[in-house]
Image (cartoon, rainbow, N blue to C red):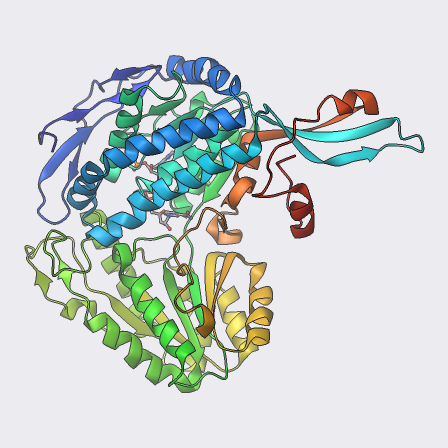
Length: 544
Ligand code: NAP
């Protein structure tokens, strides 16, 4: 472990720089111990951003997709070799038990590996064909061919505290594969893990100078550095997202921005399922799991649970019985299943949010009754709490549950009258990252999923036949879209090769067929997503 007073340096302009201020201490949320400090005071941001754009961008663009994929594979090896250190940092700084640290660390490494492999499929190219040539008139000689070229700017990432590892690599992997240099600004509270991963990669000398930089500490001045061809990807609260959207870089320079904000995700048990049924059990299990993984500090966590009114009591009992078994406390203790909230500010925010929801809901399982294991009374640990809106009429009357995201181990059980009522209540979330739907009738599941698709980035359908196979409501798989409309921020990340679209500029080349024929690449393996497949699914083909 690093000494408790160490000031973590920033990496910018191809060099390490320590901030010139006193810095902000990062704390252990269980013991309160000071771990390290971060500070970004005094950095020459203009020079650092220019270096990334000019040196990093040019070096990355000189490589093919295949070569950049190989770089990602080499980065993955370095990270794998240092995994133990990442787990130590996560335990100390995020207060997470090993399984929860894995969601972040191994989730990040897995995502990186998937994009490394995708690089192979894109071949020895420097740009991507987008669709087929289209005739512009009667004579087929003059046609239009769209291409996607890597943007000649940089990608600035401003990330949330809850995924310091995955949040870095789920964004950086598609950016680097696209040939776009990255500057990451992690959330201050958990910046250590991000900084350490970048440090390991920089020390290994894998990436070209300027391809990957990290700034820890205040975000002041970062957006002012952005220029027209840069892109900005933000993950965090709706409040900060609103500040970012209104920055002149976005409003005046058209800096492309992706927002992943907060979300009131749902789980829905379809009508017609009995309390003694596999679908019912699958819902209860997943809700309890989602409430407790990372102490509910997942943007995708289930916040609202919709069940038929007749099953309200049975669902309350089934979920509560599972929650009661959750041991809460010091993540270093083997008996503990759920660790801490990230810091005192988050702990207080969760308690405040709970009180706000309780004014319109009953308490079905009270997290305050969980004794803390091996942790001092002032540790930032909190047991899981299940609330309920009592009746279908109560569900209509309660509005807070649809607009207040309590970012902790808290969910609300919401009874409904019929499917139409359930769908109407789910939509009161105003757009979410994910909704999971539970049932055993394939037609009913497909119908509900298509009804919900327009207001969710992902619909996760759980039927008994996939009980042991499904990837989990809250787990973000790189092959599937992450992001959601409306309140969720309106962003899109991942989704396989679709992620590359954000880092490319689409342009229509209008020319003679002979000129356009020059764009054709040597034959490559497009097994991940062929143009035909993309056309069938209505997505933009990025591989040709
Ligand atoms: P936050 O307070 O909004 O902070 C997010 C990031 O923005 C941090 O790096 C923060 O830096 C930075 N920031 C703060 N003020 C800024 C400003 N004026 N200009 C530029 N950057 C600024 O969010 P959080 O508390 O870290 O994260 C929790 C929230 O993130 C939850 O609402 C959760 O739902 C959401 N989230 C969403 C997703 C998703 O994919 N949709 C994933 C994870 C989390 P400092 O830390 O230095 O203040």
